[in-house]
Length: 407
Image 1: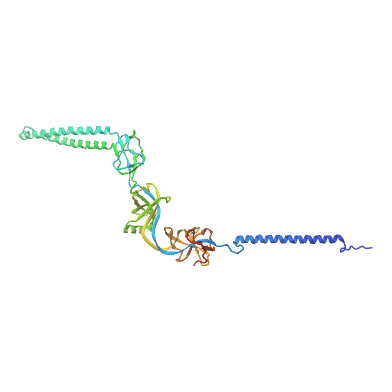
Image 2 (image 1 turned 90 degrees about the vertical axis):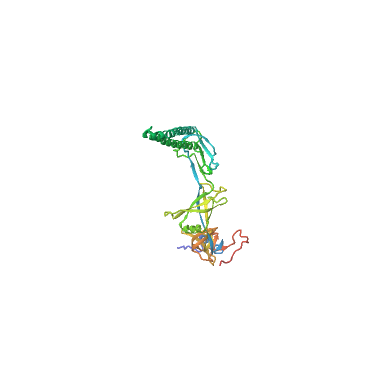
């Protein structure tokens, strides 16, 4: 007798089928959620990479712009100069002796002829008195010898005195004449040595450090100066300029006075004004630079010897060319460039070759044309092809206002 199992009517089989169906539905739901989350994250990441948001595009960057114009600009040369004293004198002793006194203060003003140092004059006074005594002695001897020559001249004519003896008397007078002249020179020399005991200023200026104190022995052979006097008025400022400016400078000096201004290396203070005074007679072949000097009266003592200053040479020459604000020019890995705004309000990077810069404006030698629009501010947010929104510069006096299109 055979018994067959009826699966459709068995209660445990129905429960298993329901459980399997429910599990499949849960797995399908979880799979759908995972796919949805992955897709959303992927889309969000792509939007961040491409810069597209809900609107689909990155918002334009705000910039200020300027037009490329053609005009004449004055030619100015800028550089760094070194201030030199107009005159500089090292005060050295001219005699050997003990330094008795110092009559000035370090860093003080002195005038030409002022007494600076005193060397012990006692030995030199004694030498002067000795030279004067020798002179008087020889003068007395010479007077006596001259009288003898005159007295014995008649005796020689009568034959009472030999010719040889008479010539000896004449020779004694000649020898004493020479001795008198030598003694006069000795007196003058001793007088000079005595005058050198008073060391005086050769020029007017500012005295430097006192190198030797009173009580020390000084000698002319010592290379260390007692002090140094430098002229603060009528200073010179020397600096170098590129060879390309050489002809312009020479032409300007031939026409008249070329003005030069100088201020501190940090740009502070009011500028001192001078005139171009010297061009070196050769150009340095290694650097292509030429050295020039400017003279400043420096009455207000704005400049000081040894100081480094900013120099601006104003040439009476104007040149025609394309001009843009100096801050337009940017520096990249390949050189200098500017951002040019196109008609569709996007920018392109344009390589340029700048020329001279004057008063915040730079002449462009190559790379731009008249009427083009260049970015003045806002370059940090830009790259090739970036969209821009032109705004009025801050502090322009007008309400900030977007421009729809750049033409």
